[in-house]
Image (cartoon, rainbow, N blue to C red):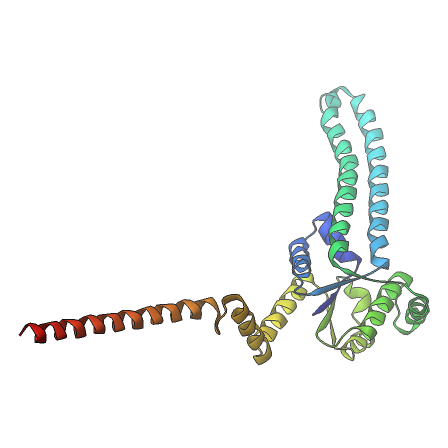
Length: 261
């Protein structure tokens, strides 16, 4: 199965947001090669733009707070509490540095596994058209055009696009675009993880998948049915050998009695 994600997937992982655990499990499935994870190239830069914007807002807030704290510290009733307010301004500065580190680490891990859908000339031209035909922003149209380009060349099979940006991507035209390419649109990573698991379960229970699993068992154990059947056959063989041995003993004992009489 191919799973398409965009910048909000990266942000969930980097900033430890509410759907972080679902995103982490999807990444683990990609790392174990149970799914193919595809990230548009444009979605690599977008998270850094978000981080820059958030950091700028926090610096501005810190500066405003620092000015207010200095004013408060001039008043005797608040002088003792000024250091507590100072800790808040330090937290604003520290949080930005920590988020940058986590963003770098998240992208490094994602890019070790995910396929990156490049932005070519045709993708840019398609994105310009999609801004009008699908009412998308320049950023969203570039992401969407990259996904459509990858879908056009991808092998047949199950595909889904998971994005939290329901405001822009959930519309009948886009859903129809994806449906004609056997790609499902999902707007929560938890729902996307549930869909992936359910499709994998269905595929694992098909006759072809069961035969493949049985073949893998044969290769591992050397016998049809895998290790469990191997041990069962060994045990049955041991019991048959024991019974034959016991029969030979009884036969020998009977011959000895006839001779002695």
